[in-house]
Amino acid sequence: GFKREHDGLGILYFIPVPFILFTLCQYVNYLWGFEDCVYFCIFGTLAALYLLTYAKTRAGLLFAVLSGAMASFSFFSGLLVWPVGVFAILVSRRKRFDLFAWVACALMVGFGYFWGWTKPDVTSITLDLDHLPGLLLYICAIVGAPLNMDLTPAIGIGFIMLTIAAIAAYVTVKNGSLEKNIFYFSALMFSFCFSVMNAIGRYAWGLDNALMSRYTPFNLLVPITLYLILLDFLSKKTD
Image 1 (cartoon, rainbow, N blue to C red):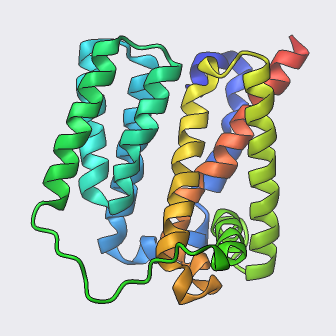
Image 2 (image 1 turned 180 degrees about the vertical axis):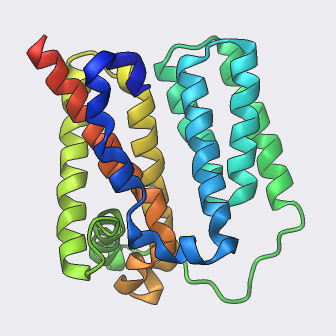
């Protein structure tokens, strides 16, 4: 998507992205082969969202569904690609058939995923309002963890990035350019939904759990997409 909007020398602005993408904060995933499933999940999610945004054909929809299925069966969080995909379809104004087909495939994948699932005797899910402040701190910490693995700085960085994301979304919607940037905001939405889901499921284990290296790849999307959104905004200012 970046290449579509930034030709020529503009592509040089993409250089910082790999340095963020391959940060050593995700060292557990580098060293533990089992965690490759995390990267399959993220790749499938981004591929599905990209295809839903730019490939507005039946073939594009088919490969988006296959990518979404790969994301879903690679890691539990990959199931989030389906509701986020609905958002991408609606904003990018795809055909109504595409929306119905996407939802139908989501139901089938969800059925296949949960077939045979049994509820565990012990659960760590936290939903009561008494823990809302702690849940918000957890979300800030897990969003900021890719840039700093210490709890207090991670919470601060996460809060700043979430604030910037909210401002960027407001400005983009106000300027009527959400459809043009839907891929970036879909990726942001996926990361935010992952953070909320992780907070609900893991907060009971303590705030330090938000800093676990294995979770950081999901929120690396936040600084990367914010950086690319900022570049797009600055490019319009200089045109």
